[in-house]
Amino acid sequence: MKLKQTNVIFMVLALISALVFLQSEAVDRCPTGNINLVPGCFDALRLASGKDYSRLSRACCRAVYSLNSDTCFFLFYPSPPYSIKMFKNICLNVNYVHAGSRF
Image (cartoon, rainbow, N blue to C red; front, top):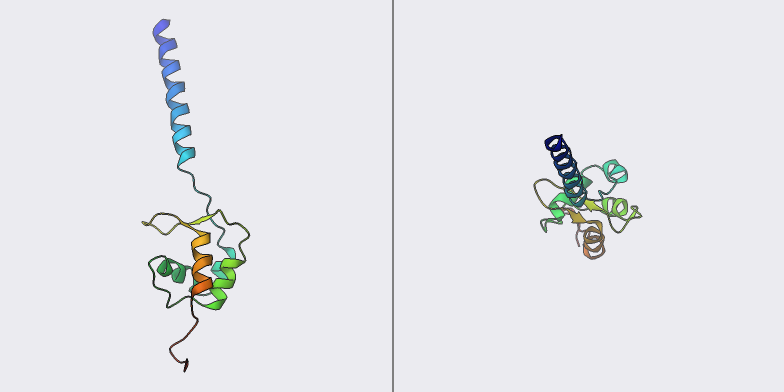
């Protein structure tokens, strides 16, 4: 009887430990609805996370700013999560000069 109780207690502790660990790994992902509506925006954000801002458009930045949360994160596998604040700052500082433009 005592061995059975020990096994049950061990299983309960293992389950609690697993749940605590999984909760600490959770990330508040940004909703991508508006971003997916802008063609190429998600890929442009992925490139911007690596400091390539060439494909970032005004429409994409508007979609980024349409997100009300400042605490959510974008996940670009296998990279670490990136905060929406980073992309909002990038959009504040990017120049929207296209190859066909004189300026």
